[in-house]
Length: 422
Image 1 (cartoon, rainbow, N blue to C red):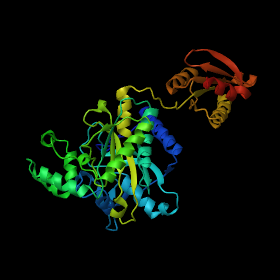
Image 2 (image 1 turned 180 degrees about the horizontal axis):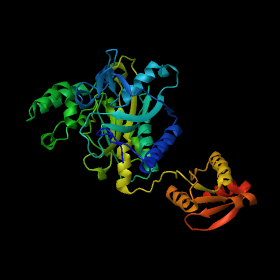
Image 3 (image 1 turned 90 degrees about the horizontal axis):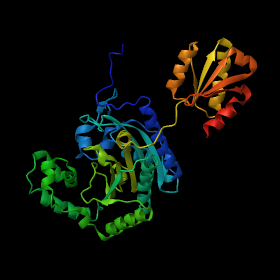
Image 4 (image 1 turned 90 degrees about the vertical axis):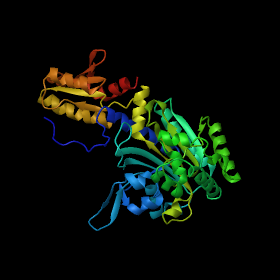
């Protein structure tokens, strides 16, 4: 009989063996970030609501429709984080990481984020992201580095169908003139009242509208790529040149906007065509004015958020060969109380030597214990009976081949390490 309780609607949960894949690809990202010099942050899950209102933007769907906001017992308005960048930047500023020299501050984090959306495949109310940020440098090499880290991670876990979509959203020098030109174009379209209101607040967000009726009317809209100032054009050309030097392919996508207001200049998205409507599996860009927006000093930055949920779906869609490390490599089976006591110590010795080991509990008979060994996924079973104990040895069985041989107890760990390394 199962519990009468269930997880709330729209929550993505992972249980073994799928959770092993989730954990393994997250650990693979940690290694990519470490190799590039990014330090780990552990952050608050909820923040002052105004951080997201000011940082993410009042006109975004995230702030206007999707945030989980509540009042605490002290009457303060708090919000479960809907994204990571504003939270990361707040933490960097609060703890003075930008004052310690050696800019950019290079950090990464991971965990759940929350948006009150209509749940569907790949779109959840509680979802998981990997976030990486480089704060304090306005250098095209940093832009290319963040893209390369994400692309390297996708490649390392076996994804082959990922596309990189790339655009520039200009800067405070060239965007106002483009904004006015875009507004003039959009005002002439047949749009609903909420969309018309958005034209006046942030017209670039209209370009991100996914509704077919709106997308049809956007044909012929002026594009930021055609109105970049010389500095932004040179910057964007340099980013593309650096990506080419790294052998990273991209697709120029002049309609790419992304859903948050803080993006400037370099903007990008990773797309997986096998996921249907929810094909975006990660993305990011530069946010050079965000620090000032939340009350900090002028501090340029760039970063990304990669969706763990959609990456798992993409791996499953591709049938990618990436495999999580086995939860169990060696499974112990004891026959008798003394043997069980000795085996318990042996399992601890195997774990200390870096071998994933488990054993049968509850005094199970041989047949039941061997079924547990098969279910564990272990490569070898170590069977220890009273006679083996008296002889100072154990039986090591290859669970795939069925072969079995006696191995001295004092040589057991060494023997198993050698066999598992083949």
